Image 1: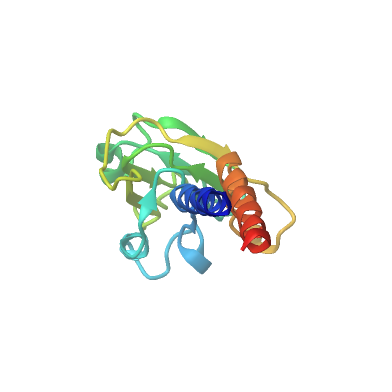
Image 2: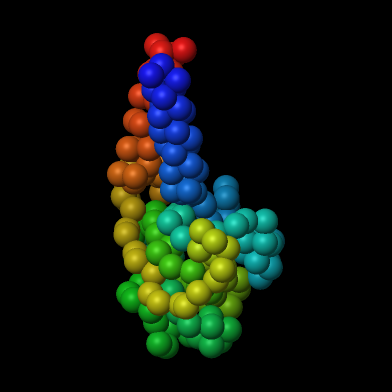
Length: 184
């Protein structure tokens, strides 16, 4: 009986670890310390920034900018290439900082529509992968405006990942660890 209990607890611990790993989310601060602005290093700045990242369904893009100085608009590739707001996917996010949750696999294109910001390099193209690593269709991304205001420069730290599954997995992992310590 004692051996069966140990196996059940070990199985629960393994399952909790697996669930925790598969539901982990990453907050990507677009442009890192530079934020979402006209890049000082030129038009390739956001291309270079994105090249070193893996974007997964469930991750969040954090666009750090001051309200009334920039915005974020998702557009199709043709509009991205021409720095045009035509055929926009959703509405522009005008309050900064802004969080965009990547809710499906595929290509994503974002621009700033202020003045000539996009033409001066303030645009971002990324590929979002599913948990299996297979890119998919390109439906609209869900937008959630972040808090604006009191942080100096309008830059807020990225939000911590959160989901009920992750919280449950963490709870189950902790509970399993305690049970193993007691029974072993």
